[in-house]
Length: 213
Figure 1 (cartoon, rainbow, N blue to C red):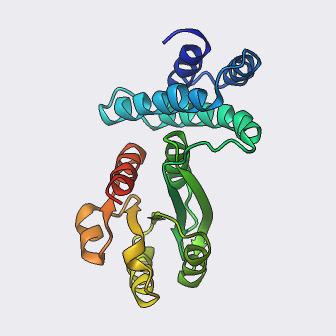
Figure 2: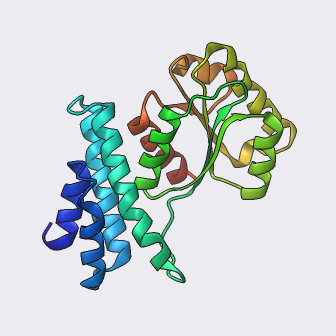
Figure 3: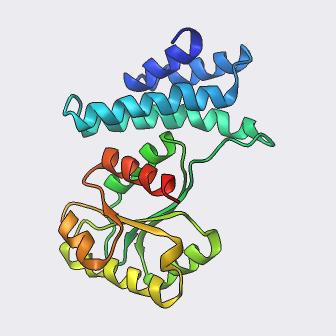
């Protein structure tokens, strides 16, 4: 890939967060198509980062720097899209369940999902079942992502899935779960649609969910 698109892609893969803003601005001044910058440079770069992480070529710190680099570039482009419709891959609500205030892992997943072209609504931490249900009704997301870092808060995930059923919302949304104490067996047991052990897996899971809708 030549020109600014290649430079932007390489900067994100390399985590060159001090250079990304100038590169994106230069590409915009050169009348580069905004959606090409997003899809062919940024999303393509985060795909490479995800694969490297999955293959243990890089680790969480490097992935986080790449995600931050991507976000800094994306923040410049988004206000310029205005009437242009940047094709969203889908809408995802993300939150950490009630009783849990950990959010580092969740935030990395969010940046990776944004890098993959998803619109992400971050509800934050310590979310009650009622608040999450309210936001699901309001925003009608394709996917609900639930995070827990404490074993004591894991039951909240099951409560949320049961509440989605009770409200008649379960069939219209995919639920993915993650966090240090969570595994695939637990996800299946509580009726979640999938489990992502890390940010790269969460992105692949989200892609599979929207492709089957």
